[in-house]
Structure formats: C-alpha cells, structure tokens
Length: 279
Ligand SMILES: [Zn+2]
Image: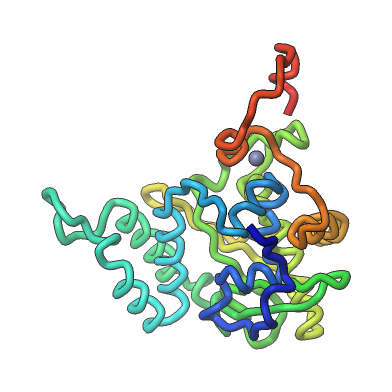
C-alpha cells in the first residue's frame, strides 16, 4: 500500500461540509485527532489511513449532535432530524414512533438549557464557527460552538454523566474532573490560540456542561489561564513528532493495550508478571 501523507492531497478550502473529512484531517491537525495520537499513535494513524475502524458506540456522539444542532439553528436541527429520524425514534416495541431513551434524555438536556435565562444570554453570536491557523508552523483547525460578536469568550457545549464525578488520571496519579479526563483543556487552549491568530482577540473559553442525569445538572465552567497556557505549550512539544508520524517520517508507537494494539498483537516471548501493572 502506498504511503498516504499530507502531500497526496491538494490544498482544500475548509468549509462546514468538508471539516470532518479525511482530506481535512490530513491537511490540518484537529484536537480530536491529536487526542487520538496521544492515546495511541499506531491506532490513530491506522484510522486516519482508513486501515482500521474502531468499534465505537455512536449513540453518545449522535445525542451530542442532536443537542448541538438544536442550539445552532432551527434549520440545523431539522436537518439532523431528517437525517437521523430512524435512529432517534424507536422502530418497534411499545414505544414505537417515540424518541428512544437516549434522545428523551437529550430533550431534557435541551429543555434544561433552553429554559435557562443565563444560558440563553450567554449562547448568543455565531454558531459552529471554523477557526484555523498555524501553531509553530503546523496547520490547525477548530470549530467553535458559539462565538459572540464581541469575541470576549467562546462557549463549548459538553454533555457528561455527572459534573462532580471523579476520574482517575493515571498519568498524574490523582483524581480529576471530567474536563481533565477528556482533555478538554487542550481543546480550549488550541481554540483560544486560533482565535488569537485569526481575530487578534483574547477570548475566554467557557464550557457549558449539561448532564445526562434525571433531572439534568448544568454549569458554565472556566479553566484558569495558566492551565490553558501549560497545555498550549504541551501541544507545541508533542505536535512535531505526531506530524512526523502522520507524514510517514517517524514510526508510530503502539500503546500496547487499545483495541487496535490487541487486534494486531503478535507474541514475541515471555513477559514477567511484574510488568503487567506497568502502564
Ligand atoms: Zn494502541
């Protein structure tokens, strides 16, 4: 198989219709792909090349998109409903024709925010705004859920299980919030930098989190600037190697225990019992 690299694609103009395309992912670094590379370079590269498709439950993603489209515009939400109607509505059983449980939860999350004056006032401005720029010479792209005209902040909608749930952060040997567990500070730091470059503005990232609990909990959450600055520096440190892996100039490392690594594993000999608890 020929090596697919950035160079094989002619330069595209980023739009909402090609933002999530494979082509865009080869030409621009995005936070979601970058996080894939942080988890396992071998798996991320194989997925980018179309050689491997991870088994992911698409429902949480779709429910998230359902919520996002509602707050984007009436047209966007209608488009989502037209496209995913059969996924949203139960096709059989006593609830046939009604939204499935996950989407009933989605409706409760939407209502919780839509009825909240503080949220409604905050979530004003342009929606789904594509931002792009270069971080130390590497092309990056991002998409802002909501960017007000004064450019003072940007808001990102997140759904989560419980605002106060503690997650074990194995690399730091401590518990952290869902925000740290899902590496949202990286996303916020990169988006803040892309806004800095494109608009010359220092925008404060705000995470609007709403939970899948019944009834839903919600919060508008900020991240201290030194933490954002730290993560932007981390991105600068990590991105060169990741780019080299994408370009076929560096060998991807295998994390050794993700789905991809297990699926492609070949035994190479005997390992000592004590090594099983390391990483
Ligand atoms: Zn792996």
